[in-house]
Image (cartoon, rainbow over all chains, first blue to last red; front, side, top):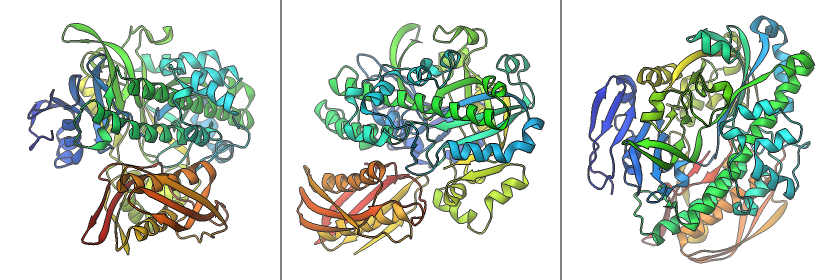
Length: 481
Length: 137
């Protein structure tokens, strides 16, 4: 099943084709410039693009975004669609952190309004949004019944409880609710999730204060409330321990299912089941429930961002802190796409990839109909992040998907070594970026140079037409785990 | 009885080599203690029974590591060591010893999200036990 040699042809400036060889059912399509592609030479993630191309029922190519890197089973930065009848669903195509995603709020404040209040603002965020390993909330403890409601209703639950507005829901992928089945989520997963709603977690998750530093599309930027100097809040987190446990439980089931349905796997982490099977239906129910937990989690954290704004500035400032958008970047969803001239319902796996629907797509709220779906691409904590919008190009070529971030280029171990003799918070402060972190170790592991330059990644998707740049954001304060 | 950390871009990979199956579980417990608490001392103040039955030794070893990750994630239980009452290729009866996480005394560590099946291996060769595990952190 594993191709003996990976043959890659250049298609154009930003596209590379992995030839179909051996038992591959389709080709691979990689988005990258020469330099990014050069960095990928010999990297195991290319083999993973090939591995995914072997799975039953794959429709279109096995796609890799320019921020591709090695992941469990599927590469991170991978997109693959599967036919609803012939295809499969794989927990490895979604990842451990189900519906890990990002949300961006814009405030009515400008950079000069915030600079002198930044330290108390960050302190308030750090204390009101628990971060770090096993972080939990003492003020939001969910009863089993309440947790089931979260798993069924997602961000809708959070808004109904008074943490947000109807407008917020319009600005979330799938309006913040997927068809989750709490009954498919194990007691262990629920136990891990009972006290973690409204917490950011650790690793690469964060809450970041930034501002609009550069504008590429003034008209769209203004429509999104992102005029130059506007202060923004980026939230990056997912379904926390509940999602990890759902994935872990599903892998056990799917290893058995793959054997039962005669699906040969080169890597056990690619384990999967036919979309029509009871195992797949159960996984999708549990995955959607975990995705709802993540939507509710980010919605609750946004509430605490608003509360911090009310405390440091005023209730009016908090009330005007609008949600720009909230997107998942680890998810599998049924969507309608045109493939080779035929409309088909497919299960699109996006693992470290972002939905990027074009203007006019019926799933978008009216406010986005003429501009396309906002796409949020965080970078590392020292440089910049980007806001893009979805395009027709993405819809026709990548199942309405684009990149998701910078992607690691240095191991955690190496990053820690590089950072050991330095004082990273002090270095960042010298650049005008304040850090509040639960642990020094996390900050050291997350040093900016541990990541690829997200600008290079975004320029590829913009150049290839699978996303369109709107603004660049620069950080001024970061809360880390 | 040894373990060593292998290079891995995103996560943590550990290779084990022991002279007995029981020692493999003891060594793995020590690795978990380090992953969860770093160099901070963990006291054996309470014990948690671990009773597992699996189809083979690899699944048993995986299930044991998952149990320790779960006990920490769900209950804040930091493992200090293990008393093994019975172990064979499919069954483990043991008591994990440890204490509740105390942020004042226990150094903050990156979150161990899961024990993965990637490159996962448990083998018995010439009376020695070898295992490789990748932890998602």
